[in-house]
Image (cartoon, rainbow, N blue to C red; front, side, top):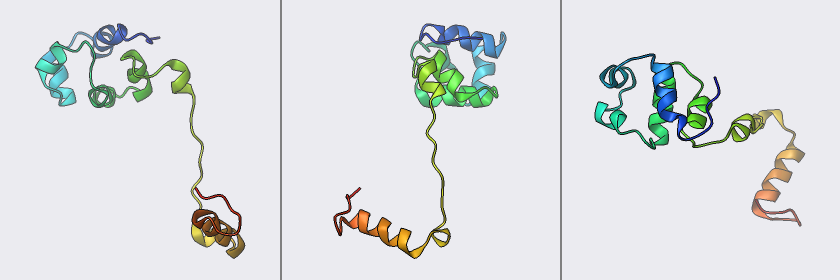
Amino acid sequence: MQFHDPLDWNQYIRTIAAGETNVEISNRTGIGPSTISRWGRPKATDVISFARAYERPVTEALIAAGFITPTEASAFVSYSVVKVEEISNEQLAALVATRLGVNGHQRS
């Protein structure tokens, strides 16, 4: 199933909700039925609520609603969380110096 045009949003809703009425969609998502009935351009928060209620990937729904492109959805940010206890004193000092802009380090 490929959706990536803002005009696909209503088609997406009808496909995912499989014939449910606006009231049934409302009961499942917590979004008011009047909001659903006039969904030309939904709020991003409603798109996310809809996707989660129907156990669909949030990125899929955001693409269908035109908030992001398939290319943007495939990009990801990789980061790691390191506990302070796991880094050396030298690494910690360098991070602090960078943050403070001391000793020629760049300030972030």
